[in-house]
Image (cartoon, rainbow, N blue to C red; front, side, top):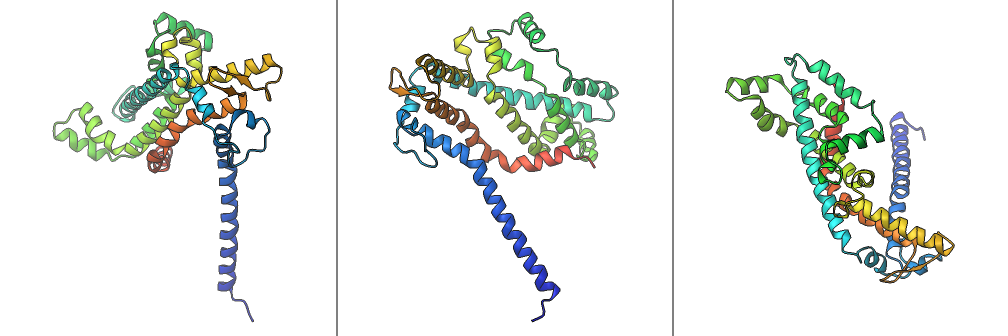
Length: 303
């Protein structure tokens, strides 16, 4: 039986799609397994975890690891600080960065090139940790919640993405609004922001994830103010505490310590802390996903 070109083409497509599906499934499994294994470890009894061999399911189900993490009331205040920081920083950064992007995307603005150059240089030039600390201290931002917000009001990379997206918007829309008597600020609020929703949602996701995961600035600027400790910083303290106790006992990877709530190991505490830190972002991400790819593509390609 003679094989036609059409039959051969169908066979090649079938083989390609089959192999592509298998490869994609393997990639998904390799991506999800570490986090799934972390969940299983966090839900397993701490002393039983020392035996190893936990893969997809906890061998001895227990919520003891989470009870130990939440045993101190300070974690609730840290959670509130992290949520407040993430929400405020995201709103402030997106609004002011998009406002600057709108101003510097207008061709009639004479100083747009020098200001753009300054912002671009900020992406590559950094004074360093010590000068930044002295700057924050001279501005009286240390031991203050504002240190979480003020340094991140404008982001140069986000500015470039948003400005590129705004340049794709028809100029006729803005001109018609001006003819109707609308000022620049209300053009920005009522016309530009709604049209830029996809790219703004993408940038908001970037800023929110970065703000939620940040802990080093708490260590540098607010370590002496317990009421301003973020969740990530508090969880980092838990991990270091459990590891130091185990190290003092003789074996970091295998020693169990008695806490005020129950037995704890560095591995089990680290797993529970990882799940607690990642869960809020995992809950928010599906609602932002539909804007993510569209916004990033439109904001990064200029015709």
